[in-house]
Length: 237
Ligand code: G3D
Ligand code: MG
Image (cartoon, rainbow, N blue to C red):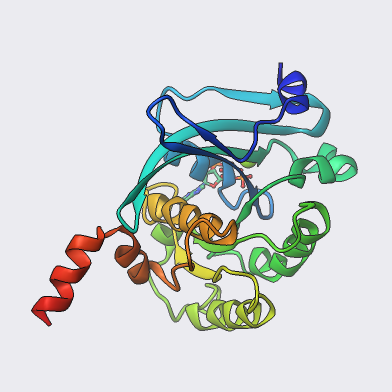
């Protein structure tokens, strides 16, 4: 049962039998109703995952194990991904939803500006309730597949999002992570893996496991190269 598990909540890191470090990372999906939180989670998890429903707080959670290599060292990460099942029941017990999380995937719907305008409210919620202070955040402009004309005034423009991201990065300058913005589609899978990969690097930096966090998605590639291939790159320059 979940509640029992919570009492004996695992440490963030455990050694596996093979001596590898396994990090347990709770992430929350945030954003207005119908922005695509559940669809994004399902796209990421693929088929065959099991999810548990926490009736008391109106949330689902599901777990996924991934293996990433950063700076030439392998890491096993168990993402525990929390998702709101319904907005209304949630209001009274939201602190339980956020408590102990290491990061927030902040979604808005690119075709619905009001969902973008609400981002600061969601971020305040996270800050108030995570019990860990400022934790890494990624802004995801979802439903990118529906955007055919970037200049359409009913679409949230990339410039507007970038302004918010810059502002947030000013606020979090001392927090060992960088906020980035990715356009996603839970329908086509655009940037869904990238979002979680980036979040893993951000959280490991935040935990001081990695010496620094990637600045952007291109920068992430450097972190996933082995030190040997990095020096090969330098040699060829
Ligand atoms: P929520 O969990 O944030 O409330 P959902 O949102 O995942 O339930 O998605 C709400 C609706 O948006 C769903 O449509 C879903 O299929 C659609 N949706 C989610 N993500 C995307 C996307 O990236 N692109 C497109 N085109 N649609 C998306 P329905 O019709 O089932 O309500
Ligand atoms: Mg949902």
